[in-house]
Length: 143
Image (cartoon, rainbow, N blue to C red; front, side, top):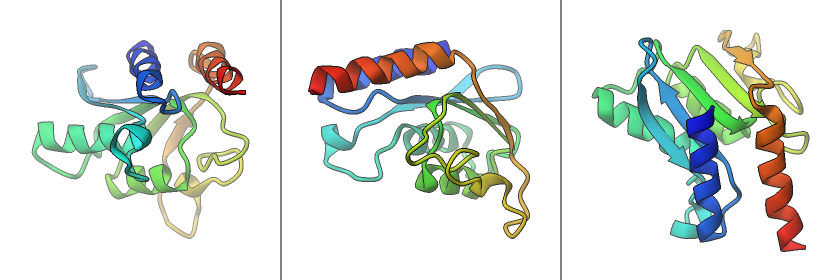
């Protein structure tokens, strides 16, 4: 999570919401990383999770990341939860909950929806205070 927090802080320089994500292999190696880059690239899909999943798939040479863990500073949105499902991610570790747009347990729980048939493990609250503070500071500076 510390690596994801470092990535999140880097998003601020381009005016992006500070969210960072890493994909971790079973041996603990980071195989993909990303940060929000919507503003930096003018791309509505350039979320930290999507970037990290893309990087991991490229590094591993496969789209199925069924032995990896996605670690992200903020609860994934619907798009990112869907991307994690598409990549067959079995575990998501998150920092802060997203009470407005979260899709892994707060507003929606897409990754554990019985209609999909997937049972993604969600571990929450990892460095939650640090993750939430980074977001609070970012938005307070914008007001």
